[in-house]
Amino acid sequence: MSEVQTDLDAIVVGAGFGGLYMLHRLHRLGLKARIVEKAGGVGGTWYWNSYPGARCDIESLQYSYKFDEALQQEWVWSERYATGVEILRYLNHVCDRFNLRRDIQFNACVVSAVYDEAGSFWTVTLESGQTLTARYLISASGVLSSANMPNIAGRDSFAGAVLHTGNWPRDGYDFAGKRVAVIGTGSSGIQVMPEIAKQAAQVTVFQRTAAYTIPARNAPLDPAVQAAIKADYRGYRERWGRMPLAAEFEHRNVSALTDPPESARAEMEARWAKGGVSFGAAFNDLMMDSEANKVAAEFVREKIRATVKDPATAEALSPKQLFGCKRVCLDSDYYATYNQPHVSLVNLAGGGIDRIVPEGIVVAGKTYACDVIVFATGFDAMTGSLLRMGIRGKGGQSLADKWAAGARTYLGVQTQGFPNLFMVTGPQSPSVFTNMVPAIEQDVDFIADCLGYLKVKGLHSIEAQAEAEDAWVKHVGAVAESTLYTSCNSWYLGANIPGKPRVFLAHIGFPNYVDKCTQVAAMGYEGFALL
Ligand code: N01
Image 1 (cartoon, protein in one colour):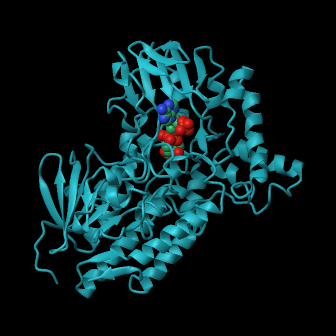
Image 2 (cartoon, helix red, strand yellow; image 1 turned 90 degrees about the vertical axis):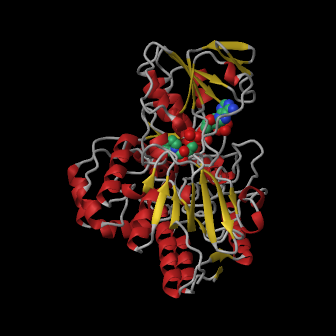
Image 3 (cartoon, rainbow, N blue to C red; image 1 turned 135 degrees about the vertical axis):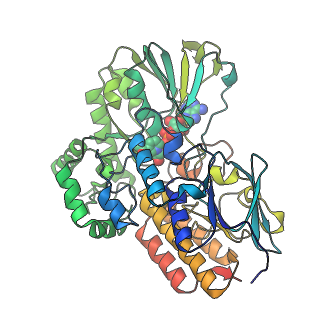
């Protein structure tokens, strides 16, 4: 056992779903731990993305912790899909209920994290200059937490207000009477735009790629439904955990190619009417066969044409890429909002924004005047928040150098050359390809069990092995390549960030990932070197 005395046993970065549960497990292990959190409060993604309309696209009863039976019984969700506000309330409740706040340092942004090879510990430096040492460094910094602010010419010359959905002002923003430009039509743009349109004098949406979006059909949660699930919550959680996306999406084992057209249409109509992402599970081959994919894609395009009154706008809003290749969105009245006289669409397809000038946005030589620009332009997903931390491992190697050609991990939990550094929902774990909360609980439990194992065995260092990492990276890539998810430029591949290596960043399939992790642990952490 190394003699080095560190300030803490573990430093956790981030106080979102991942960090809070990690801290709870570390407390249970009797370890001295602290969360360092850049924000002024808990919530992670739900803290930063507090724009109007922010809402989860997984049903509340499933997008919540399962680790504590009393917690899941006592918390009452009010809507089918929780708002960001309700989720923040929930996370604050969790924080207080498990006495976590005493070990969270807020307004603490990590600027560097350096591994000491001789002593097997990490030194973390915060923006304030404060340093902390710990045996283990655990990143729970989130997968969609590094906002992407595109470098559009003249951006800083704009005379009005500039907002980003991923870094929304804490006190909100009053759009009343304002001319608002919204750039981006992913999940955030599609959620925020109809809410802005309720207040603003004029809304202009700048769309580079039309997205597929399904009506959420959000509604108050029926107490009877909630009670029925709570009567067997453990059982439900277990069943959901064995589903491909760790959530109930009513997967139907029928090919879109062989389902008779009337039956296929009836199924899609029923799912469209019910709302939610289970629309994408109407057939078993939408993401495996491009002909099958067309069945769902054309159905959505028909719905757009039936909803949006102006045919040119309807055509521009109709996605051209395969259904589901970019993440499918859920909306509340997105398409219908374009029928309002003060809402219009500027299609950037094939062009892009020329530049931003003090009075607005210039496209194809025309200036669209506005008072506010809302960037709904997404994130440097999966790797952005990790690479911002200035992490240096063995031999002083930076994580940025190690991942210069793309992220490389073993199980998404560790990367070779960086001992005692763990990632919750790291690249190449299922993360965004699942219901995030069970994915987080899976990773936190794996890490905590591993730390418990090291403690019992009197060990103080763990590092992913190069061969195990190579095999895992190949496996994750091969699974993705066998689907249609790699067929377009999505953030799953890092393709939304100029210069980012094109590598598929998530493991598709939750249950087999869980099985693999269980097996690795049972084999004494096979693929890791323990000292
Ligand atoms: O980000 P996005 P998001 N000029 O990357 C456009 C989760 N989430 O924040 O597609 C013009 O999807 C870009 O265009 P293109 C969810 O997992 C969940 O909306 O790259 N446009 C695109 O339209 C989601 O998938 C929830 O051509 C530019 C948009 O900006 C993920 O977060 C809610 C541009 C970015 O879309 C990310 O969603 C919100 C430029 N220079 C988010 N640069 C729910 O739970 C980018 N764009 C419901």
